[in-house]
Length: 159
Image (cartoon, rainbow, N blue to C red; front, side, top):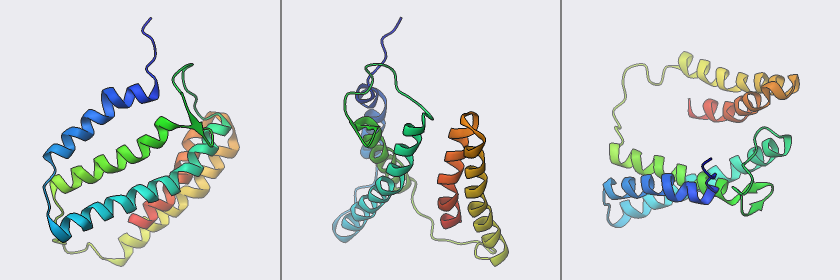
């Protein structure tokens, strides 16, 4: 039987090499653009921590998932240190990928039409009570319900 990786070993083997590749291929900005990009990424990482920490802590406390024996070395608010690192690694990786791909400021006809925007916001907000309802059903739908309730406001905001 293969021994389980600790969460930190997982990051060393999988997450950090990906982050290093994305860092390497990301465009090199200078001056004000570099400061804005770094500041934007820092804001997104802060939001990721502030929004995700309470949800993950609650879901772990409810038993939505667990970790293999010995996989977690340090916890805070019942959340493993590796999970906290994942919040930042994932956010920075997506940001670097977006900078690599580029940001196309061109909008198409209909991008700001009210009806699709309102429908998207309504769907995002509707995910919250649906998720809460699934959580109330019991442990079978705990993770799915919690995830829907957590992601609903984000979908509504970004739509």
